[in-house]
Length: 441
Ligand code: XUL
Ligand code: CO
Image (cartoon, rainbow, N blue to C red; front, side, top):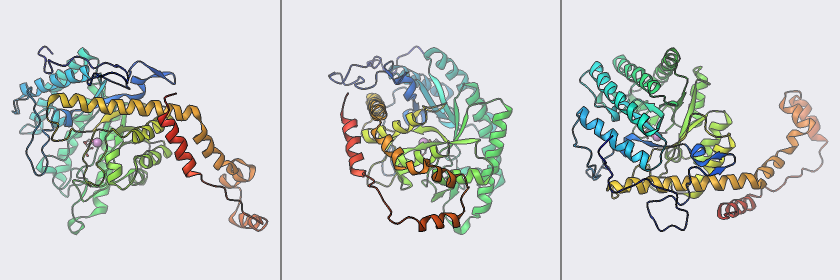
């Protein structure tokens, strides 16, 4: 890594909230300790290769606009390596400790599986050196099973067994290189594992094939000694009309139905949650209730625009809720906050990559501090505990442990003369939340 691709930019530093320096962190102070752990270790920021390096910012109506002076637009290995150099320089300068990639955005697709694997090997050797030089680690790897025309009808769920084979080869290799790079997790996003129309689809068969594929992948991960967490990333649709792992509940049901529960956890993405008609808090709570929250794709959608717009996360309520969930589960174990986010098409200069990641990192640093304040204050958690306190009485425990029959419950109901509901106090709780988000104590 010799040539500088961002020559006018030096490493972004924490300068505090009063600083006039725009390329600085106002909230994110990597070594600051919060609840016994540094902000760096709580947040575990990752940047993704596909948006940061490979997204030219085109949209369905217009051409790419992003300026990428390090990229000659060719499919050569040389160009792929220079692009990786630029990425790791960016990560270092932005103080981002992790990265994520798809096999095909790192190395060009070859004319055959063998050639594609050879290309990938060359790039893996290159990024392995870049990882050593910069200290940046791999959060997770994945395989792109959706861009190539051979996957137009799906990968593991393709009506043709041939596509299943291609996908198997790709995932086998992607798991192996993720392991080689010391990846902490491996992600499956089922972009085209769903249907466009039910008129041509055998949904039952497709779900079974997907489950078989995931079993094979989990078995192979074990065989090669990969001990990282396998993750599934739910999304309801886009590009499919319906994706089989459409949200956290559907995915957990799928895992349980096919004997995969416990082998996979979930990678929850904000914009996917909102596309599914849920809040991010909902998806995180569902995943956590099954001890299955593995990692987070940190972005947000555009209200009123029904696309996966993958904006950088700037909403401080959103980041506070996410960090409340992360602190609530005792922190990430092999997961992190991956910015699966892209700049707007109009923010096309290289410096915009820095502005975009900085605002996301500061928003999460703010959310972390706010979440820690909310937990230290304790009023909201105590209210919730108190609300369910009747379930900790001997009677409540007898019911939950199955020692009371429905008839016995009915008999006891006859002895209750007045029911005594208590207020849910939603507005009071929202007031406390606002107070604690705003206070800098
Ligand atoms: C697509 C998406 C993917 C996954 C990785 O919406 O989020 O980029 O994160 O395949
Ligand atoms: Co994602």
